Length: 137
Image (cartoon, rainbow, N blue to C red; front, side):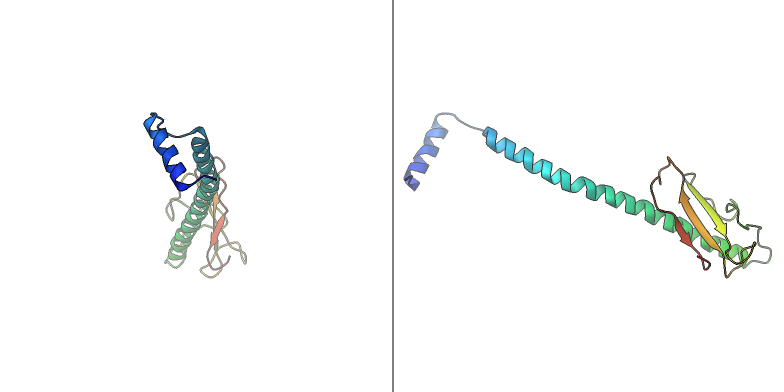
């Protein structure tokens, strides 16, 4: 059985013989640990990016709904029935399509319009879930 004295002597002998650095086993263990950490971190990072895209679309839909509500409550609202939101009301990112719909009638009113923000395929929001906002959604 090895004693503490024998272990210390072996350690001293190794140091005196000029054996310095890490063993192959120690390096393999470090590489395995780094691989495990990467396998955990990469999916988490990708999930955070997807959540950011989804939240951005929600923000765009909310801003467009506010702009449409402001326009519809004005004295001469723009004609926005079922079409894309006019640039005069809301200027969206080129990677997002913003549309207005009205479930009750052909022309949206202040009480029943719905704004939908959808990602354009191949754009920076690609893969994001479409977001809706407004009282008619």
